[in-house]
Image (cartoon, rainbow, N blue to C red; front, side):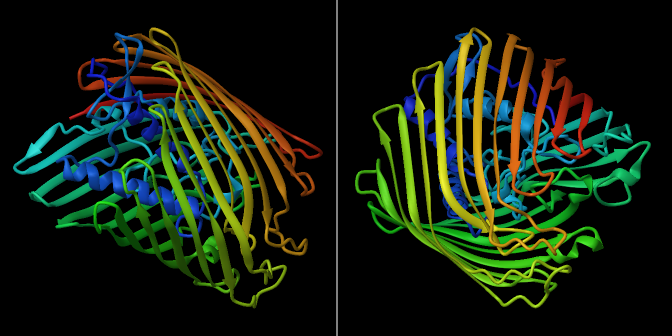
Length: 563
């Protein structure tokens, strides 16, 4: 989905610490299994604390304290409202071409997050926090409202796109083209019942329509494919003295993949996920705070032949934080998840993690976070063996660590680094263990010119491999980089160009391939409420020792409108 222009205006400058915090939230957000992987636990509580701070200030957003790109000055400046051109947004733009999507030819799936439906399984960090949709139809809405109905503030944005895809089925022998319509409505509404009680709804909901080949749709009948983007949330926020609560229900309906190592289009299926729960943040005193989250997660495949992935998971997570000076902080983090599948093909289990964390600013322009501990996974004995199931009886007793550092070098250059080792649920074995590295740098090259370069490395090892099981996975290494240049020609016109290169080196027979991708974007504001997007995507995939090579052209025309 194409990004659009943001309204750029001058904002007063703030400390560069704010920008480092914004980048820290991004680099901490390493993709993995929500409720199971420690990196996701820390990400959730970072997002939750940010939400509670924002709510107490009277807004309804989930992020605060960022910097944005100001076109007139050609630098990053501070703002108390959200903008589209923050440093982390520039990194996201450069990484978007590698984001796996149902109609995208990208194969840059993260093996460590293939079993997680909370967000898309990309190599880089999740695009947004837990309480915000993965995409919005128009970034103008971020932190703003354009409709007021009595006491209810509402932001509405409509996105309508038409895409020509030359190879929807990603085939080298019989490519099938189609025209696909995408309609998406973004809603960001809040009702402040009292000073300390806020009801909010944030969602991006819509549908796709395949004009010529509805049978190639990932789920449904192909005529109208429902999409409810991850992060769509109905929430009720309550503050009672030192206690802050959020009661939430988070829903998504979207495509997912059942195998991070294949190029076969049949590995894509539709999934419905509902996350209902409540989170609490207790400021015990000026130095100590306790945060807890309980979540009931239900996942359902939308096709019967993928029902072996249907599951329910109950999770409780917590962090106890000590911050005597309000700058650096340390504490204990952990969580326990009870996993139950509807069918016995995959194993039920109890999954736990516990560890210590430390985070601190280093001077005025650098933010550091490090966490380490233990993961313990105990699965039931397998009752279904190959060829019907993986027959995995492996438990986990392993360490984890996550390290992230972000640095705002000056008002034109920022960069971030994340690396870690942890385990998560898998769809072809009990779990998968991965070592990963993400790096990104964003540079303002000139007035209106912004360059982002990001790279990734992942080494993943499934808990078991049985060649008699058709869906068995083997060890693999994936690495690549993304380059994106964005130029703001005027305050109302933007152009961008990007390139992605990725390699997958697998021990599986015929599992090695590399991929090149190119993209071009043009965005222009037509009026104060409307903008138009033109986009082109090209993917070239080269496989070794098999006939799965394919290329794909995508032409996209999109229109955004604010009501």
